[in-house]
Structure formats: C-alpha cells, structure tokens
Amino acid sequence: MRGLGLLVKMPSSMKTVVNYFLDACLKKITDTKEQYHIEQFDPLELEEEVDATSLVMSIGCDPSDPARVQREIVYPYMKYYWDNLRNILELLKFNNTMEELYHSVCERAFNFCLEYNRVNEFRSLRYLLGKHLVSLMNPTQETNMRYRVVWSSKTAELQLTTRFQQLDVACKLKQWNEAFNILNDLRAIMANSVCKSSLLAFYYEKASQIFWELNHFLYHAYAQIRLLSLHKRQNKDLTEKELSAMAAQACLGSLCIPIYTAVGLLPTPHRRRTTRATRRSRWSASWTC
Image (cartoon, rainbow, N blue to C red; front, side, top):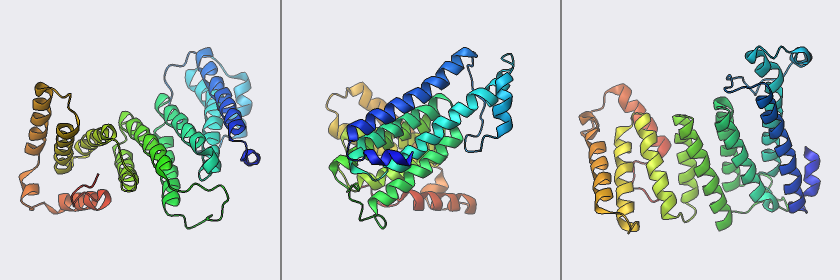
C-alpha cells in the first residue's frame, strides 16, 4: 500500500487506481452477500485479527449456516476492505494533490459503516479523522513535506462537507456521543472558515437532536432558538405556518429545561454532567457560528 505513494505526482492515476481497487473489494462483499442471501450482518469486530483456522474452515463452509457464512466467508472480505480504507486514509491524510481523493475515501468509509451497521468501526473512524484534523490545523510535525496540505478555503470546504456527512451517519447509527464529538470538530472548522447558511441550519438541527438524546435540554433549546433565528434571517421562502411551527418547537424545547437548570441549582451528578458537556462543547459563551 505504501507503494501508492509513488503516484503522488499523478493524482488522476492515483484516483483511478484507488477507486478501482476499492470498487473491486466492495463488489466482492456484495457478490458474496447476494450469493449466500445475507440480509443482516452480525456485529463482528473488524479490528481483530483473522486467524488461519477461520480461513481454512471457510473452504468447506456450510451455506445453510448464515452465522458461519458471515464469520468465515464474508467477514474476511469486510475486514480486508476496512483495513484498506484506513490505510489509504493514513496515506493521503496530508497530501495536497490527493485532498479530494482523501475525502472521497472518507465518504466510502461512512457509507460502509452505515450500510453494514459497523458501529465499532465508525467510532474508530471518528477517532482517526479527528487526529487527522488536529494535525492538519496544528501542523507540529511533517511541516517540511513538499506536498503537505496547507489550510485554505478549499480545504475548509472539503472538511466541512465531509464532517457533515459524518455527522449525518452518526445520527443514523444513533451514536450520540460520537456525534457530539463531531459537532466539536465542526465548530473548530467553522471558526476558521465561512459556512453557508444551509449548512449552519443543518448543524443546529442536528445539534438540537443530539443534545435531546443526551438529555442536555438547555443546549437542545438553545440550538432550537438559534435554528429559528437563522431561518428568520436567511430563509425568505419560509411560510408563516412553517415559522410558527419552528417557533412552537423552540418554545417547547425551552419549557423542557428543568427548573433547577434555569436557576443554577443543579444536583451534583447533573452539575458534573452539564459542566463536562459545557467544557467539551464550549457553548457556555455566545455562539460565533
């Protein structure tokens, strides 16, 4: 896989090779799934090593046992595909000639996690992309790379698009803690770029949903109010009925805030949880987004 780095001066060729390779890997998974009529996948851990015994036993696998088919035939293909997604992301993470390809592979990884309900892999992916973002925005290492990505408006736009896709998948997988961390990544990116109003609306909408699921009702209401304010300023096509519905939703969200939260009399466990959420989200001050 490291040999792909030789194609650094030929981004179009690199893109062709990577896409062909990943398409072939994914096609093998799809064909095997259709061959054995697998509708739902068990939560096998792809981060674990595939032992030699499972590979040998897969030769004579009984097609009448769906669990065994998944474990001994489909699972190695899925692991191989997942490992290569991660390797390619690591290879391309700071290369400015492969920036679009990097984000295209990110999208593939999101779709893989969503289609096959790969919750553990999605968490691992969130951590990996989070590290890439921190290194990109705070270049303390590899600063002498000839083709290193330098933060620009194009980079910010690509990062925003990828993070919003990641946020949407996190909500569909109901991974609310991971979605919360992605919100923080988005805030860091938006602090160094200009975000379209449509993306901001999506951000506030998802933020309100995430904080509701995490029982942070104060922040849920705040996100609803910010969403309403944004639509009133930017969405000229909003009808009176739609505006009234959004205002009612924001009002109900405010009424859901516990009284002890409003007056600052949180019980100790709730105070600790709210303080932790405030520190992690940095929403105690006015929003700049």
